[in-house]
Length: 105
Image 1 (tube, rainbow, N blue to C red):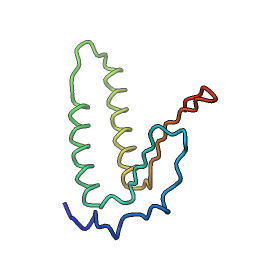
Image 2 (cartoon, one colour):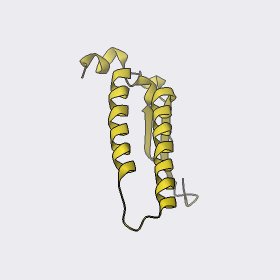
Image 3 (cartoon, rainbow, N blue to C red):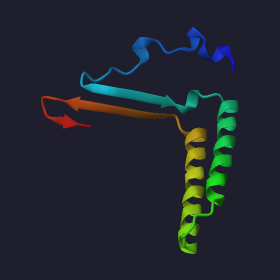
Image 4 (cartoon, rainbow, N blue to C red):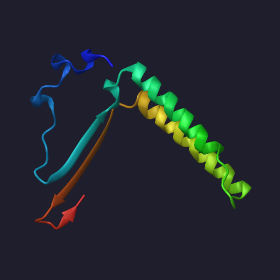
């Protein structure tokens, strides 16, 4: 929403980025600490609305214990998402294939 967030002066220099693995197929780093707070709050609001909709759904043949467990799981997921967005710094994901070792990680 603000062009200042993608200003070239704010981008990391290539030498500051971690060196990649030669066997890497995909590598992704999500930097939560660089997301503007107002955007985080907007996302959290939308996530809370969606989780509340899922939590309030009625499923046929769902036992009361199953419904309670599902609602508790959704509450825990909401807390986890809020914690990651508000306190998390980054999330790194890398998929590598080493053909010499016949290994995938």
